[in-house]
Image 1 (cartoon, rainbow, N blue to C red):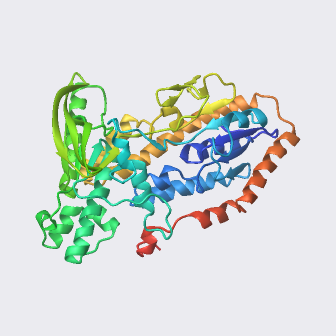
Image 2 (image 1 turned 30 degrees about the horizontal axis):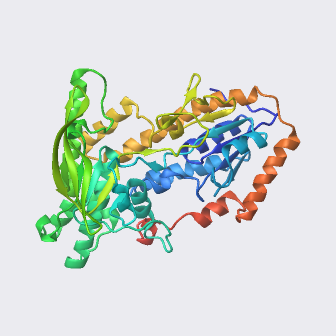
Length: 458
């Protein structure tokens, strides 16, 4: 849709400054609408910074540069370290200030709870770790003064999950386990970028070692279905032949990862209970499952799986705000593009707040191309998939932002005094936290990159 600048000024609030939030704000600003963007974090990058494994350097840098470019728009005012529910209530912002529209663009930061009664108590001791916490630690543990959670990956760790995100988790835990033994026992040290690219098996071979020489049990991935049914988003169509081909590729992809990083895999099993001794986790009780006509069936057959630690990688969901209607984990929306929040006239949602998931649904064509590249070239498929996801994510947000802009521009124009009053309140808030300019703030808060410490990037 063509963009038209308007002389009259409206005012919008965007909550969340990641990929969806920055894109929505930029599109509104292109229509001549002033936009205030708030985010709970110091940096506006969301899961690109804390949820994407640090070896995806190119994708991370490109997406963050795009967010920077958009948030520098003169009609956008960025306010970091501002959390809804703590610094202000959503209803107060909507009722007390003259926003023509409020747009919810926060990401899916809350891990889906692991459905095993009583197991949450192990989170305090690091015997239960959730994926978001794991990724934040892994990405930032090298930084001086890192204040986030710290973990020690235990030999025999079990990961519950499926899909590409769980494969990234398996990479992390196997690199942590093998890297520690290689350093302590054989005085061999490898940076994470080398280990991720080569894999554990190749590193061992290059150093005349075998897996048994490390003396490790290793990590195990537990998935409720078979490898052929892993949700790797690669189905090309609903035709039976294509579905079968997709299953073959899923199985082949998992086996490739297993061979490269030397982890174990238990299919058709779900955790239903646990065992402990002296307050320490000792085992999971798993129940066998079957798939019939696409439905998951619990068989009642249970077995014991020894493990000292569990990592849950079963998905992320948005944190729910009080007073907002939901359908499952997603905000309940209506309208042609499902952007308007039900029950509100000027409240909208984009991104993961609408999908209720940690990523937007991938187009079938994207999945087909990513897997085609992997089959033909053996290139790592995850980066390509994530890049395509980001492009689709932005396209979807653009469409929603256009509709929201149309709504805003159809409303009575606030007085200039009203707009300037809110604009000034934000400026006062920024001064309190030491914010001067966007670029200075980003430079001051962007973490030291591991590749820079290692001298791998100039």
